[in-house]
Length: 73
Image (cartoon, rainbow, N blue to C red; front, side):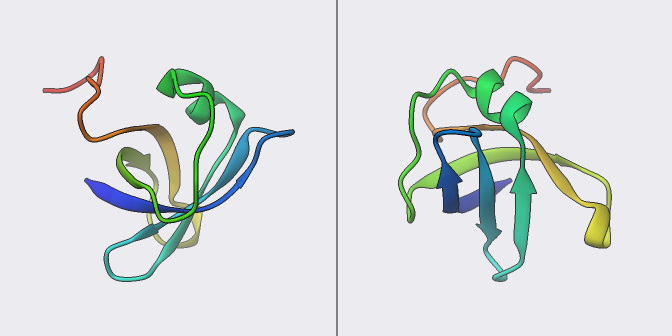
């Protein structure tokens, strides 16, 4: 699934992405740390993996579209 970086706090390494329908989905430091990235800029396109549904939905992995996902099927 793809999304757009919306917010990012480099101190906490957490933030949120926007799905293509405009829905914001948060991510925490472990999801960012798994990405191998050093920084995110608002508007940057990302490939993401999520868990949960509705308000409980969270990003568990994110990376650039050209980077590998270690759990890709």
